[in-house]
Image (cartoon, rainbow, N blue to C red; front, side, top):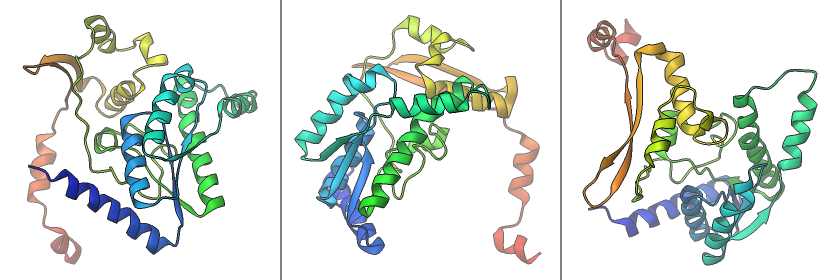
Length: 252
């Protein structure tokens, strides 16, 4: 059984050591109102009292409502300083500046917000001698659910090796059906991560890979399952197994 108290202290010590080695005097992170950023904020605050969480709403109504309320609740409970930078006008200015240069597609527009958020985090960090803490978990990194130079950027990430398990009730059947559609209209604003995974699979494997999303009875509760079937090139696999190790390959 995992020793969660010891694990928490190890992560706190990791952050303290990084701060001491870097000469930074504080930490800044994006407080989105989600569970990942909540845990990062708690860890950073335990390691360094001079921790600031930035609320960075950007066009989404949820950013100004439910997300903000959740973010402020966690920050208040753990006495984390919170500041808000409204990035909606910045995003709109960027969209306006792009007119006449290109016509941004949906993916390009979706990536504007995370990149503007990271730009803001690093501006604060540079101005106040802070390190930027990442808030992505291991599952997100594995499937590529992040924006390059956006939420994928950081100076350190204390939860990079953690995966997420929830105890929710699964998805409604109509939503499951929509998610499994190749080009569902849901992907315009919601389920961006799922869409990202599906697009990447299509780019790499074409129609040879299968992505399925469904509910499964977990006994006391329902759980949502994301399943990916990827074709394996057996010839390539066998060739890899026959290759010499790194030293032999280098010397040869």
